[in-house]
Length: 424
Image (tube, rainbow, N blue to C red):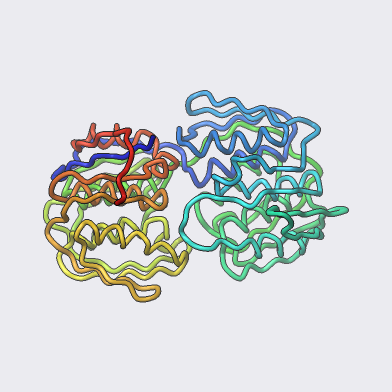
């Protein structure tokens, strides 16, 4: 049995919606708990499918994990297993972030290669090269990343690309290494800063969070802590795009608007009126049909690749022609194939897509290939005539807590339906 959403077109979203903890942060924070014996408490956790999957990964190496609403308790024993190869690994891309903590604390790890979204290749070369610089051996054997060391030591590490995952793994491996590690061309995302903040609360010595150079002075041991996850900027941006696409009026709370400076500026150019409320949220109002805007995905503080499907969806109903350039994940444009089912006038050429806006899309069955593509198709369905069926909605549930309930409360009509798809 499969589930799909019936999305009724023509909605205008109005009201207030709260953003909870960031998916791209909480999973890494859970992995960081492996670095300290005892019970670590993480609050403001999003109630999404990926959190219990990560809990299963941690249990597989010996942790006790209790999920209590938006609070997660992780008790890490003195004796951990170095093998993280549970079945949950194949369902969760972020599961590879246990590699750094295991190597850092145990000096060895066997971590199953991750699964997750189908958005393009995600090689682990930079993760492995970073561990090698720290003094570990690393290879891929029998579907696992295998790393081992007699003792990690500080090193100067340059990343060819500011990879979030590589930055996190090298960072978490280095906090217990002997000496000083410098990570140059490090990722600068707010979620990286969140991990640095929690590690510092645990006793790590880290300088440069939020900049392209991280300096880590190794310590002998860390201790458990209690930490609150930052608000999810990608979910916050999703609501911002939803307001503009449906010509709505939404107040979004629980997220720092400065984490979305470029996104909100792009939406201002599309015609939105945006009011930011310090670090607590923002209001976004769109009175008329949005105007076309060009988008280029880049590492933070650039426009996030996670938001590219929403850029395409917005462009498909905007006045004028937009150019969208994808510089991070080559398979993100799979989303456009589904948008064309909805009548979008879009063409791709390598890393570029040209989208000519039309006044209204037309309903059709569509399939989500990843979390953000799924949410983007739901928003597109709100701008289509008739009822759009969105399939493979388990992807959406992995990243958006209470997505349907929130949309319906804001004025949409979306039904979750359990049935079998007909792909003939």
